[in-house]
Length: 255
Ligand code: SF4
Ligand code: FES
Image 1 (cartoon, helix red, strand yellow):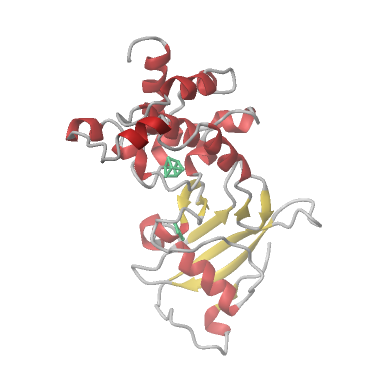
Image 2 (image 1 turned 120 degrees about the vertical axis):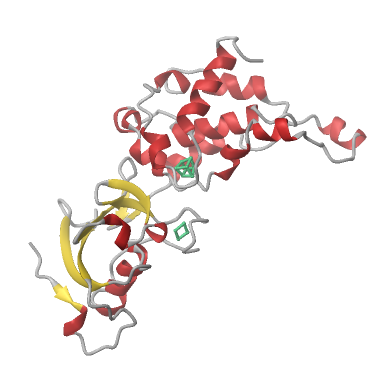
C-alpha cells in the first residue's frame, strides 16, 4: 500500500485548510507498462462543499500532476468526469465528499470502458453506439423546404421525451450495466435511451429506421432489465424505462 501523503506536510499553501480530512485513494494504471492497477493514497482536507473532483485536483496541484483525469465544466453539464467513487458510478464534480459519509474516498475508472490512463477512459464505444441510432430529427428534406416554419409541439408531446433529452453522455449508465460487461457488441443503455428520445418526438419521422437498428440480438433484446442504469443517472434520465417503452413499439403495443 502506498504511503499516505498529506497536504499539511507540504510547503506550498493550499486553499483547502479545513480541520477535517479524508484519505483519497486513486487508482493508478498505465496500460502501456503496468500489469495491473494500484492505489495511491493522499490525505486531503475538505469543506462541506468540496467535491471529489476538487480533491483530485488538489492531488494534481500539490503531489502528483501526472494523475490522469478528464473534466471540463465542473457543473454536471459536459459529462466528462464520470468515475467509480466508493464503488458507485458518479460524476466527480457533482459528488461532495461530505455526502459520502466515509473517511476513505476511493476513485477508480468507469467499468466497461477501456482505460487510457488512471481515471481517464476511452469513449469510442459509447459515441459509436450513440451515432448508430441516428441521434437527430429525421424529416423529408422536401417537406422541410416546403414547410419553412417551426414544428410546434403540445406540452403533452414534449412530455413524451423531454427527460431523455437531458442526457449529457457521461456514460455512467453504461458503466453500471451488467450486460455491457458481458456483451462487447451491446449497444448499451445510453444509446437505447436516446433512440427512445427521438422515436417519441412528434417531429421525428425516423421511427421505423431507428427501430430496425435496435431490433437486434445485441440491441434492445439483450437488455436483462437489471435497472442499474437508471439508478446511477445524474440527470434523472430513466434508460430502463426508455428501453421498455421502445419494446412496446416493437411488440405493437405503441404506435
Ligand atoms: S442516460 Fe444519464 S447516465 Fe446515461 S449517459 Fe445519459 S446522463 Fe449519463
Ligand atoms: S466536469 Fe463536466 S460533468 Fe463533471
